[in-house]
Image (cartoon, rainbow, N blue to C red; front, side):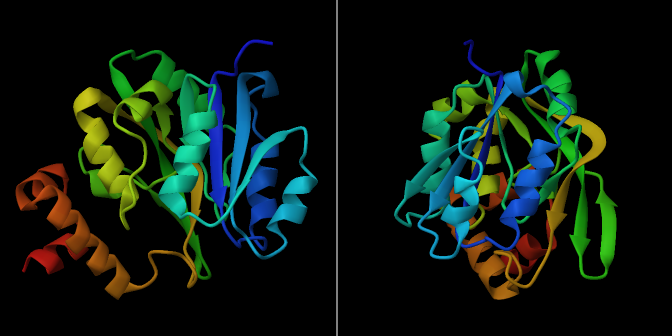
Length: 233
C-alpha cells in the first residue's frame, strides 16, 4: 500500500470530554481515506482517553506514552508520520469537512511554499466568529489547522518546548518558503477556561520566554500582538 499524502497529528492529554468530537470531525473529512492517516499521541492521560481511542483501533495509529509534554508528543507523531504533508488538530478543536481537501489542493500547487494556512472560526460560550489570518503576521496564526511540508518540519528540528511553541516553529520555518493563505474558515478553534492560553499571566510569561530566545527585533519583524507590546513596554 502506498504511503498516505497527509499525516494528521493529534496530541492529547486528559481531554476525554472533547476528544470524541474532534475525532468525529476527522471521520467526516471529504478527502478520501486512502490519502491520509491519523496519528494520535496519548500523552499520559489519566482520564478515559485510552478507552475512547481503543474504539478507533484500525483507523487511528495510537502512541501511548508517559506524560512528556506537548512538544515531545508532537515530535513522537512527526517521527511516525509517513505523509508528504503534516497537519495538526487539537483534541478540543474541530475541523470542517473540507479541511484536508482544500489545504492539500492549495499547497501541492505551489512548490516554493512551506505551508498553507486557512482562516478559522473561534468559538466560545457566547458564540462563534470568523477569523481571517494574515501570513504576514505570524501571531495571527495558531498551532493547528495549517498544512506543513513534513520534510521541512524535520529539517528545522521539529517542535521545541516553549509556551508559544507555534510561534517558535513558524519563526524557524519562515525562511524555508512562503506561507500560503487559504481564505476559507476550515478550522474551529474553541476558547474555554481550561485552554492553555486562557491565563493572561501565563501568556505574558510565554512572550518573555520567546523574547529571550529570539530577541525584540526578530519578534517585531514577524508581526504585531497586544501581549507582545505589553511585555516590551
